[in-house]
Image (tube, rainbow over the protein chains, first blue to last red):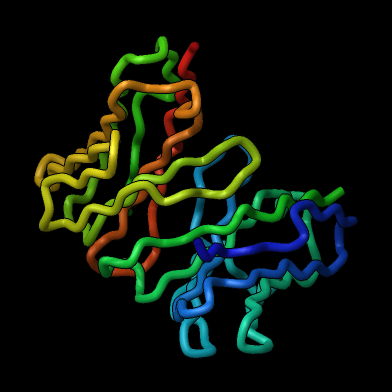
Length: 116
Length: 112
């Protein structure tokens, strides 16, 4: 069964460094999302992306964050200058249609980001 | 703002017992509700998606019900097995935007 793949599975970085988290959504999906889960907390929405632009973003997704679909298969999340509080599991997700249709959201296994 | 609550936070049952997991949400204006399974250190696996117009969805041993007016959904897992041990999350999509609001999850342990 097709799946969303994320790399790396674990990333350790120093505070202030830039990180890029990578995702390959399911190939026929059109809508892409990033969510994150801080240890012990709820999964929370960061951003949704469709047709090469952000369709919605949360208050967490400030100017330090950006997303890009650099080619036909990859979807990336960049954090420009990481802070300690950015440490979390970051999940990429995709769907064939916007969330709210009959299309469920498919999640990747996540990238655990540790900022030291 | 939509708040999603899952009770209990943790549950331990002997193998073979039926599981009942609860999810409640504060705003009944939802588009759909999705149940996920999360294994430790892993991603989220979609189990069932219920549209707001539906009362329940079934897949194998899993059955999810939705009572939109009272803001509740229940996930039933019949004849539990040790392999069902995981955290189960419910997530609600409100009618007026795209982002899912998640509950904190119920961590299930099925004892052999």
